[in-house]
Length: 418
Image: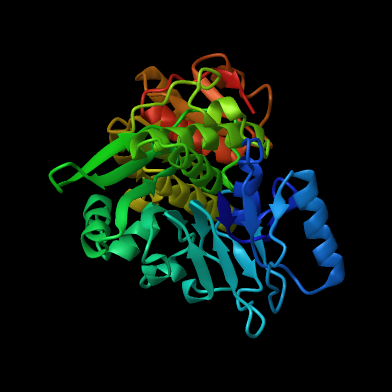
C-alpha cells in the first residue's frame, strides 16, 4: 500500500503547537503499525535543513519515505489561530520544480490533494485508489483521469462534496458524483461530529446512503482527524472490508487520533476491534443554542468562529445575535423561545456575561444539556454550573464537539472535563 500526500508545517497559536505533519505524513504514520507499513510519496523542500527535518520526523513516526520524492519551489505551512479556525496557508503558490512529478504504484493507494501539484502531476498505478481532495480548490472540478484504470473511492468533507457534485444537498451531490464518474464506486462524506455518509451503488445499480456515527471522546484535537479517518478507511479497504465497514474503521481511527494525538493507530483499532472506544452516537442533525456575549470585536469573532464550526460538524445553530439581533428588552423572550427549540446549548462563559449565565440556568431548569467553554472564568462563580449538570471545558475544540454530541443524545459529564 502507498500513501500520496503532503508534508506541511502546522502551526496553532492557541494552544501553542508547531509540528511538521500534513495529510500524507500523518496518514502514513497512522498506518505505521501495519505488517507492511505504507510508503509515503510526498513533495519535499529543496533546503537541506528542511530536508533533514522531514527525514527526522519521518524516522520518529516510523514512516518510510519514497526514494525519489520530488521537490517544491517553497515551503508550505498551515497556520491556525485555534484548532477550529480556518487556516492561513503559507506558500500557497508553491509548485513542483520543473519536470518533476509523483509516480507511484501498488495494489491500494491513498491519495490526498496536494498544494504543490494538480492531479495531472500525480501518476498512480493501483487497483483501488482512495482519493481525498482535501480542499475546495481541487474540487473545481476534480479530474479523475489520473485514476482512469482504478476503482476510486472518494472521501471528502461536506463542503468539498457539495462543490464536486455541484449540488447544495450532500446526498444529491454525492449521488451526482457517482452518476458522472463510472470508475467511482463509492463516496464517503465526512461530517465531523456527525460521523459520515457512505454513498454507493447497490446490486441493482441504485444509489444508497448509509450513515456511520462518530465515537464521542472526552477530548478532541480536530486538526488531522480527516487524514486519520481516510487512513483507517484505506487500510480496511486494502484488507477486503466493504465500504460501510471501512468507514467504521475510519471513524474509530479518527477517534483515537482526536483523543490521544498518538500518531500510530493501534492495530486492533485498524482491525475492527473498537472496544476501547465509546459507542458511536446516532448521526442526527441537532440544533445547538449558542449562548454568548457579542458586544466587542473579540466576543463577536469568537461567536462567528464557534457558529461556523458547529455548522461544519453537522449541527443547525440558533445564535441570538443572528436570529434576533441586539434590540431592546423584547429580545429576552425571543431568545428564550429559541432556546426551548434547541437540543443542547454551548455557552461561552469568559467575562461572566449575565445574559449567558441566565440562559444556562434557564436551559438547566428545562432539562436541556449544556456544554460550557471558558479560559478565564471565576472558579467560585462557576460552582452553580459545575455542581449541576453543566459540562465545562477550557479547550474550545472539545467544547464544540461535545455540544454537538450532547444534542445527539450524549449525556454531558458535570464539571470540568478539559
